Image 1 (cartoon, rainbow, N blue to C red):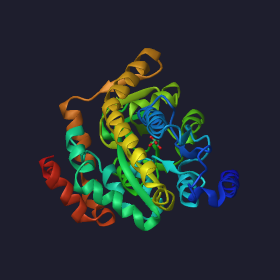
Image 2: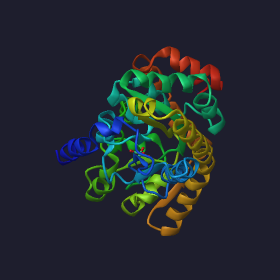
Image 3: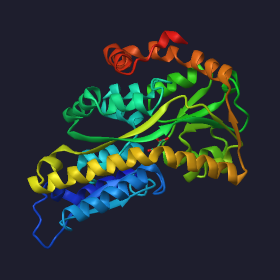
Length: 338
Ligand code: LMR
């Protein structure tokens, strides 16, 4: 309720001006970029990089305000805020687009669908990625770029060495039906919850565990309230950078071009740092000494794959079987090899 009030207030204050970027020369055009993670994460750093480049390339005609850590809006509210024009840019995780009625983005949540970053890049930087971004236009949203975070691990308060270890565990998930199905396939109990609430929910025991790339786990201090973490790499987490289409289309051509360039550079940067940021984060978790880190051997990895690959089939109707097949063709993924 509080967030909705804040949202409406911000929309009123931003008002119609949000859609009318014809500011006098002395008045910089302000872009509010809201996100839910810490500044010291792949997304947080890429947003900062974008801010610096956008301001430099436009010679200060554009000013980018970054609002990290859900300080303005939580997951769902930020989508509404973008559509209302209360903020101009977001980079929600790909798991969170179904609130717009676009379920295809949940294809990125299918367990193990990308063997590595190279397979992922074939999709996000190729025609499939372009088509997915373009599909947002019907929602008044312009998809600008994909930014990586990385592959997810499971964490909990008891060791997770086999899929059976997650049986009966209450696991926090993002708002994605595919992730819900993934947890059900493991016999776990999925709990959808905004990112900003996860630390507290883990701390007081509303949920037993969760999944995220290590950079998110560490910067939200989840390791302080999770005794075990298993490096599973069972799923991908990345972002689509999006803007309000009316706002973007109304920008003077030269500014739009400069912002596109800033974004291109920020995307290269984001996708370059993601892996090293996550590697640093897992070492920081290790150094903190609060969480035992488990690695799976080949048999262990196979057991998780066997338990989770059936989700591809059970979620095909929701995502679109053609899209899933197109990704298999692009990446060479063969679900029958497990
Ligand atoms: C989550 O909600 O778990 C994360 O995806 C948040 C984010 O934006 O990385």
